[in-house]
Length: 417
Image (tube, rainbow, N blue to C red; front, side, top):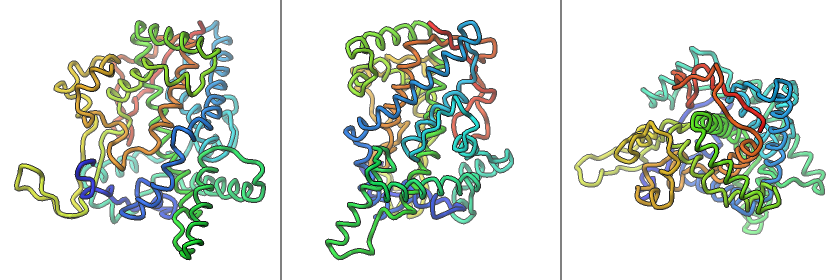
């Protein structure tokens, strides 16, 4: 993925319905086309651009805590919540405002059109989920030939219309600017078009409308399950480990005191223990179980006479690496100290792969870390997470889910401090 990247540039091909918008996203693009799109989009995820979006995500986190206060107050100070559903709403708010230019306070109004429709994006029948699961896991070669539908068609149509309408509106009202991902992609596309016109290559535009729409939809597909799962599993471990939760709360309060109580971008960078908890949560509960690449030219495995032919699929088990006692002693124990600088630096960076690695790693990892920190900093400052009567220890994994998921949900008590 890194040293010999030139041999493993591509991911496995998945034929999809609604192909224009699913096959044109960064996950599925190949070769030079992928490289061109990635180069144009990467600057939208820079630290400088994330600072502009921090306020939008912070507003979503404030709305989240307001919902918790209302729910807890109505129940004598403690609300019992299924955390995946709860954080799914928060994540939907973040994605709505940052990727689609839609503000939708979904925790307050679950009947809002954007919420009702997009929350159904991965509604697929159990038999169909099992079919996809078996194809991708055991016979990935077939995925190149059998069209797979990863997203509800009604939701797809709705999302395409949202992006097109928002894009058209902003083109006509350029004074009404929002520093979200959609706007940044529009800016990148405009700059790309100008450069092509100057070089007389007007037919070589990389970020056309279909490609912009594809990346917005990818934001929902890749960001919704992974981010909400991370926050859910973090909360679960904090509820089970009150000493870790207390230490985190102390850090959050001390840092915010130095920043006038504001969860600014700079304040988040100082929350080092919070980052360690996030990383340990990603180790123990990686949202994606494995990383896949396709050999693009014959490759001989170093130190052997084994040659991988072109089109050979290669998979690395993230869950396996993260639970290997050789790298993580007592892997079943939740221990944020594994990510103290000196401990972290003693391990190979390639045994921790929640975001992949190399040039095709997750482009949104900085944004994911920022939004996760904001949500947890707001929550832990004002509430205590505790077991409820419905909390399963340990919880059972859902067997036929593309992402890590608790079979019966993760229920916790959220108590006002």
